Every structure is written in structure tokens, then in C-alpha cells.
Amino acid sequence: MKKATITAILGAVALSLASNASAQVRPEDQIKYRQAAYSFAAWNMGKIKANLDGTFDAAQVKAAATAIAAVAGSGMGALYGPGSEKSIGAQKTFAKPELFQNGAEVGKLAGDFATTAAALAKAAESGDAAAVKTAYGDVGKTCKACHDQFRARH
Amino acid sequence: MKKATITAILGAVALSLASNASAQVRPEDQIKYRQAAYSFAAWNMGKIKANLDGTFDAAQVKAAATAIAAVAGSGMGALYGPGSEKSIGAQKTFAKPELFQNGAEVGKLAGDFATTAAALAKAAESGDAAAVKTAYGDVGKTCKACHDQFRARH
Image (tube, rainbow over all chains, first blue to last red; front, side):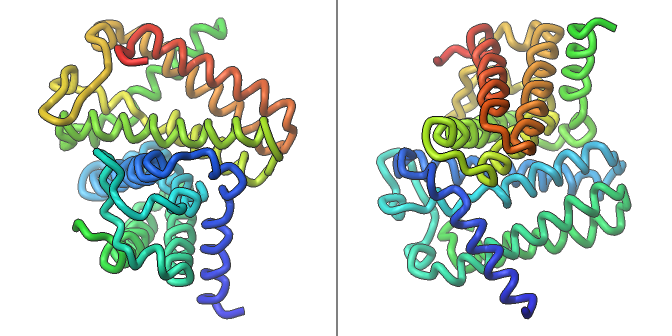
């Protein structure tokens, strides 16, 4: 199989992974949890960047990369269920309507995130700062690719 | 060493792990990120509970347990820095002032969380639902222990 195909399948798997336990999560909580997951990932991305820009603490980078990979592998597709397309009261969403209409493209982007996050975790495991730098950049590109297409607030 | 001592040391390590990259995170972002981390963990705890109560999907449980362990191991002590003791504008905190005055006790609780979350990840790796149920209960107790002492909102 071509890499793009495998990536798309991985994305579909990631999106479906949490399906059996998603029914009881209210749409407003889906919005809350998906934002929390990205926020937790962003904090960990920030830590890796600080390590690349300053003193490289391999243990901290490893923990941060593990956290990002855990987010990417947590089956977040379940947090984009029916009713979660629009803000609900104080629970605002910045997801564009297009996100909910382009499952295949979103699946591909989710797969890219999972693939690059796993590669970052592997690079962090090695403790090689140069490898981490490259892998970190690759993850950042997948974040940006999805934000550019499907996030209303940049 | 006694288990309690080892746990306390693990907690201290967990708390200090992110120290070198914490300086640049603003206090309001520390509040935001720590709430995001717990929220992400809570979603994953909920998934495990749904699996224990319903159909046990070993892959989903494994991913969820990995996510919880990643939160517990992410060095969240860095998110309780100076200036983050009180709500900042719209960024509310529900941490009691006592949390910031009892480093040793908080370190012990953080260590308990890290230890039980690692055990849950190990149980999930095995795919044994009974082992997951026990380990899940142990993690839940560490959540509650900290909430009871240091969280103003229950």
C-alpha cells in the first residue's frame, strides 16, 4: 500500500477507536474534552520547543513526546459527534462546519498527526536532539495543516 | 526504602520534571494547561469506566490508560508556579490555597497518581479486564484523595 493510503487508514482507525464509549459524552463535553486534549498537547509541544531552544532535558522531552503521542492516539474522533458542530452556551467551538463534512480529509490529517507524534515519541526515546527537532517540526506541520483547513480561530 | 518514601520521591521527581521549561508559561496559562490535563485524563477515565460497565474494547482501554499515565508523568508540578494560586481574569482556578503551602503532601499525592496510573497502563497492556478494574479503582482513589484535600469545587 502507498504511504498515503496507510496514513488514511490509521486516521480512520484513530477516529473510530473510541466509538463504543462515545455515546454517553454530551456534545458540550465533547467540545470541552477535545479542546482540553489539544491544549494539553500544546503545553507539551511548548516544552519540547523550550528544550530545543535551551537546555535539552531528555527525560522531560521524552515525557512530553509521550503525552503528545497519547493525545494523538486517544481516539479523538469520538469528540466530534453529532451536536458538537456549534458552540453550546458558554462552551465555544472554533471548529469550522467543513470539518464535519469532510471525514476522509479529517481522517487523513488525524492519521498524519498520529504518525508524526509516534515518530516524535520514538525520536525522544533515543534522546537525540537533532532527531527530536526534525520530528517536532513534522508534528507542528500536521497541527498547522488541520488548523489552516478546519479551525476558525488561529 | 519504604513504599511511602519511594512514592514521595517519585512525586517530587514528577513535580520537578518540567521545571526548566516552566519559566515561560504565564500563570494564567498554567491554570489553563493544568485544567486541560485533568480534563483530558477525566475523559480517558470515563472511557475506561464505560468499557468496564459495557463491552471491553482492549485497544481503547490501552489507549486511554496510556493517556492517563502520560498526564500523570508530564511534570504537572510546573503548572502550579508563583502567580497561579488565584483565578486570573476569566481563567478560574479551583485549587485551594493549601495546595501551594503543602509541597510534601502534594508531592506524595502526585506520586500516588503517577504510580497508580502506571499500574493501570500495565494492566491495560495485559488486556485483563479484572486487573484493569482494580487498577482503575486505585487511580480513582488518588484523584479523589487530592480533590478532597486541595480542590475547592467537587
